[in-house]
Image (cartoon, rainbow, N blue to C red):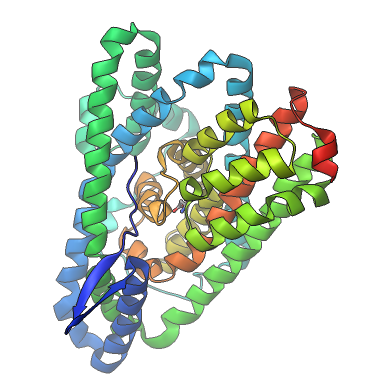
Length: 419
Ligand code: ASP
């Protein structure tokens, strides 16, 4: 299974060995970085290469990670196409709500401009892509040479090719497909492990980059980060109210209050563990015991949701991508906005339901519109706080879909639901 990015790491403090979680180390890295930057000012330029190294090794991960995890995500939907009606219905709702979620994030960040007060300089100006017409952009999504797409890191083309390959693998003879899928699963597994290794270096990379940023811009960088947290939380609440409960009421014609009451335990679990996969047993229990969704529906819809449905993560990406663009003073075109919605929605299929996965996927969305990946280091320190909110939304979205599907398939016990 997809590994835990926030795996416990052990630090040696004399005789006593105390485990310290990775997110805490990253947070400490950020705080120490800011302090170092304020004290040392411009001379933090010296430690910047450590940060650049961190960014480079994240870059190294993007292409193989996305390619393999998307193929694994798509081929895992084979069962979905078997149960075609329920499967297709869930996939459509999952993708639509994800696209809505990212739009909420983009709208909030456009209105409130969380990064507007920052004025960071772009060191990788060559990453900023020239804008093209919509037709060219749509045509450009289809690679004429997939190997060239992989070699040049053209994210959208890679996603499109991975989807084609995944779907083709589902449709060929099982005996021929199995070894290829197994190879991709193994490769994806290795990439998750590599991501875990790279993330162990994150506290140092974040330290160096934050020291450099704070050295140049002083305390001005902190307030925008607080704004980002507030915005992501507001977006998550809006999504839980209007998309979670809203759709249950509007489409399912069920009382949203009972829905919220029934899923509360799963939400708390998601908030504290920041893992949709880890919350799965509790979500399944809530779905069948509190919401009255039949086991056959919940045991199919919820694990699939934990793999491909990431509304909270998409919303977070909407806010963060714009925050980073604003912080670096880069204007995005309408086409860039569409690219962000498309990339984040498709990328959510390949996002693991584990702590911190969204941060790595953020690098993918940034790369798709040519924004500087250094932005990741600036927000990595507050990622755990954001992860708590987005995972809660992810789990709420999965449970909402299980209720809607249960209702439409007459597999929902209304008496249990209303209790
Ligand atoms: N932690 C999230 C989840 O498990 C994924 C993410 O990092 O966005 O759903």
